[in-house]
Length: 362
Image (cartoon, rainbow, N blue to C red; front, side, top):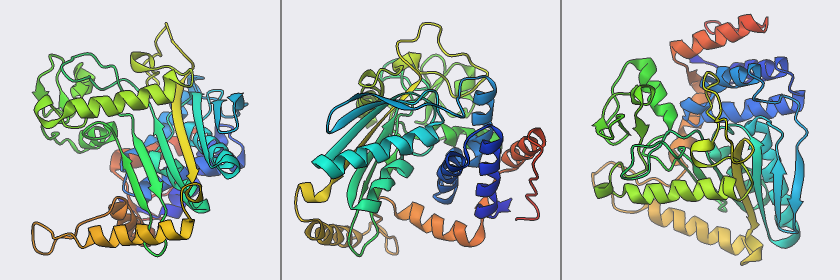
C-alpha cells in the first residue's frame, strides 16, 4: 500500500507523544523515521515504530529522559542519554559535536545509555546545515558473527558520513558494516522470500538463504559474506564502530548490547549502560577555505559521474544518489508500506486511541 509521507509522519509523532515524549522530541523522532522511509530505508522507518513502543512498555526506554554530559573537554564529550530514544539522543549529541566544532574546529561526542537511533545518515546530515562534515555510527544488537565464528558478537553497526558540496548535492555515505542491515531480512520475512547467499549463516555456521536464520540460532555475516570475499574487513569495520560507540563511552559492547526486540531480555551481566553511539563534526575551514573545498567537491562528484559505465545506459552513482531519487519520488507519490506494517500501525492506533486510515491517505 502507498501512503502519504506527511500523514505517516504526523501519525508517528502522535504515537511518540502518547508514549509521553515532549512534542518537540516526538516531532524529531518522527522526522528521523520519516526520513528513513523517504530515503528508501524501509526497515528503519515506520516499520520500527511498534518496536519502540514495546521497549517503552517494558520500561527499557525513557520517554522523558534527563540527558546530561558526564565528561567533557573543549572538543569532546560523553553524553548519558538516560535510556532516551536514540532518535532523540542522536540529534542532541550531534548538535553538541557541531557546537564544539564551531568553537575549536572539530567536535566528537560519544553516547551511552541510549537506544536504537534509526538511520545513521539522518544524524550525519545535520552537519551539512552549517558547512560541516558529519560522522555518525552506532553499535546494535549482537546478531553478527565475526569471521570464522558461530558466536553472535556484533551488531550491523552502521557508519555514515555526510560531506557538503557547492552546486552538486552532498556526498552521503550511509552503510551497515554487514552485507545488509537486519531490517532487510525482516522485509524478506514479511514477503515470504529467501535471502541471497552471503547475508546469513545457520546455527552451525553454514551459508543459508533462510530469511528466518536468526530466529533459528543463525547469524548475519560481516560485509563481504565470507573470508574469500573480504568478510574480515567488514568484521574489522563493525568492531571499530563497537569500540568507538561503546568502549569509549561506557555503553555495552559486543554480546552485551541490549536487544532491540522487547521480548528478549538484556544480558544480566552488563558491562556498561545501554546502547552506544559516536558522532563527529568538523568545520571545512579548519582545513582549507570552505568555498574552495566545495568547488573541488563539485569537481570530484562530476568527475566520478562521468566514469565510463560497464553497460551502456547505466549511470555511475555518487553515495547518496539512490536515496535522493527515492526521496523525490516518495514525496510526490507516497511511501510503500507492507501490509504487515499497516496492521502494526492500526494496532498502535487502537492501543493509543488514535485514528489511522491508511486507505484514505493512500
